[in-house]
Length: 181
Image (cartoon, rainbow, N blue to C red; front, side, top):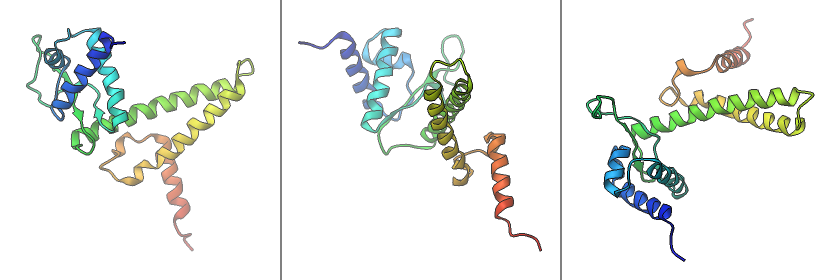
């Protein structure tokens, strides 16, 4: 029993990206490197490689505009690139990518909390108990992550903290202040 063409694509992309770790590469660069047309076939292989990299402890960053503002495509638009980072080889850009991913995950968690809280309170919901459990789990996650601003401004920019987090921090500060006598 042999490998499918999709499995060969994934292997080719994985080997090529690992060989070019730390470098900014676009879909066009990957396509040229592995000789797979830049299209859905290549994009599917890249998605699978992202999962494999995560299991190995490596990271294939999300596609974002190149750090080099001069890097443009034929139409003059900035090129979107990614980088394959081996475990332990992170830098400032990989930290920014991780924070961006964390912010996106928190936004999704907050959306989940709103939706599941609504369904848990809905008397016509098909699974109120299950939605209540999911809402509680999302709430606990949000509560746990809300303390991230204590690790320092280099990790969480203060202007991006939510109003709720600011209010909680102010309340905690008032509660921990010694009473003025």
